[in-house]
Image (cartoon, rainbow, N blue to C red):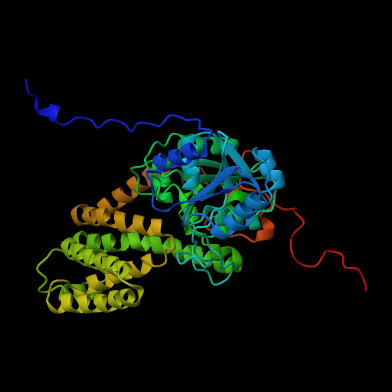
Length: 516
């Protein structure tokens, strides 16, 4: 009997090649490598005689483009061909022939194939059933430059790149302490992406480190191509629009977070580094705050918070007041708005939604186009579109002003995740304002705050230290206090209270001056 669902069967799972011990013949080992990799065109195999005047065959294999051929020639081929003698064991090769920093041995065929794809050179000796792995990565990397997403007027100009080795080196330049821990793991059955967990022992809460490792260890996926893959798979509240994991391209920001008890997650192939736990108020902090005067930095944070408030509520309040509560508007202004809306065929909420969608489309088009054309198109397009819509009677001039003011307020937000949240929540608030007035706006804001109160980032309340309120830990939230006043490290991430500096670092002359 034919059943309709018998046609569609679950595909068989990928068969995992068992761990195979190699042959003792060089030809058999080379054949196994070619078959394991599928006879790739970029596999380079250099056969030679081990030692000057010897007849013992050997070979070196690497992937063209992933390994440094100059280092292979200088530190592997020449020493083995002229200085190795009869050395066959890994210890003799490392002590008498090879000048590389490390040399590993393995008899696992899959491990050898994975090592080749990571830029490792495989050394084979006839008569040995094991392979010697020498680390010689040499793929092209991007030069260090200032990160485009976090530009600062003052401070370091270096940013992370796509090479995880370079990124961890940049971090060690800031944290020259033996307490810095870099734990590595590999995620992705196909991509085999290296991931490094960085933290400072004695500062971070061990439970947070265990939770990070547990969440990463549960990931079973074919490939990790970016840090966003890990962020989506380990974040708290995956259906929430609010980000609970921070990311940055600056090594000084990562170092500052580790000193406060955070955990950093490096992903090979991505210049962005994840930071956990991350609180809501940390998205309004910029690296430039800590390189400027604390009064100026505090003003900047207030402007960002005001920008978020305006970007979220200005269109909805305008629609609610003009539609349901016109008595709240001054009479002269109300007459101006009514005269401007004369001839507009749409209700106020539809008019605001049309302009919001138009400005969002212009914003996306400006981001996707080349930089030389994107900014010009977004500015000129907004001016032309707004004036044409007013002349055509589709929207009114006050609505264009309100939507433009909302876009300007969103430019005050420096973190892209918070900008995306403001753009996403603005539309439900507009619909609530168009149906229920100010009551709907207040109900939407109350639900949003209740949702934020329920969020946690790796066990830490999302709105800390404001909810629950902890005034002693609020010296770096809404306002930035001077550096000399912050003697204790915040205990939201740490496992014990500890000092970050001595209490006597207050600037100024001493109380008792010595006479000269």
